[in-house]
Amino acid sequence: MLLKLLLVFCAFVGCLTQSEYFEDNLGGSGSFNEYIAYTRASENGRVGIPFNTTLESIEAVNFNSNLTTTFIVHGHQGSATTSLNPTVKDAILTVEEANVIIVDWSQYSLQSYENAVKAVPSVGTYLADMIQALLTANVTTLEQVHLVGFDLGAHVVGYAGRTLNGEVARITGLDPVRRSWGENTPRLNIEDAKYVEVIHTDTGGVFPNGIGTPLGHADFYPNGGGSQPGCLLHRPCCHNRAWEYFAASITHGHLQGNQCSSLLQMNLNRCRGFLHPMGNNGLSKLGSGIYRLNTKGTYPYLLTWF
Image (cartoon, rainbow, N blue to C red; front, side, top):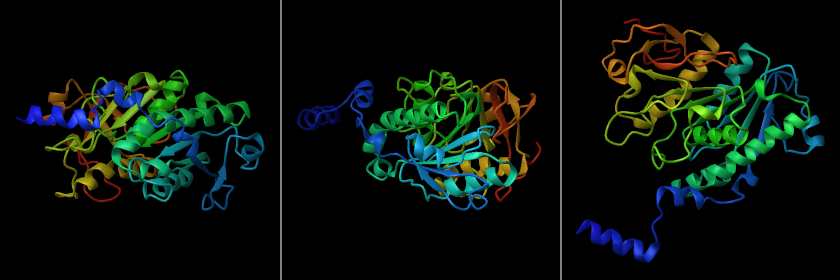
């Protein structure tokens, strides 16, 4: 009966296969991307400077070409002012001089989830165009670029990295969203950058927000990747912990995971392999595999040894 109802529904409104879903993206939606640059020179990182791909606009920012250039990309229902952005931006500029760029694609991220998903390919492609414009202006090199994406933003930076032939130095995926991003979709993957790190924080329960399977060179599962200390039953809290842990890792440099031989060992909390630092803004990380760490439920989430 359920199958019949589904067939009738599809006959009236049309149903897309996974591949068609992504092919039917909102072409040109990335043209609405907004970019806001922050450096220590801009009133110690408190004032952002909007810019676009024109040389005149880029030169007005006064980027330092010797520094790491980190892009931060929000997820569904996010915008430039979402807590993720100032938290991560401030963490970076507190500990190092860097070019930090917030990518605002709220023109589509604030729409329905379905429309936001369809916009991802275009948003990522236009982000790659912006990176290319910075390369042309001699502001940075691909070896100096770190793309950080949360939720749908993780798949956006995956698209950007893929468009640039996987040559960016690093991508960090913060709890990449699961819904609509199965194994056969163009989701964030290990080939999108020279080093891809993923932090999984909401992969448990019946309807997890995040993807539970490994996606990168190094995949970290704080507290097993499911329920996070201090979050109780508030699921968005677990999802948001990914960027909260990431920001804390930058300012404190204390979160490290033990390498696991398998997801089973990780779930059993029995990982005893090599320690590898989670997060930070470094461009020379070389770790690979699955990692588990346990944290406390309050900032700065200091590691609880096990």
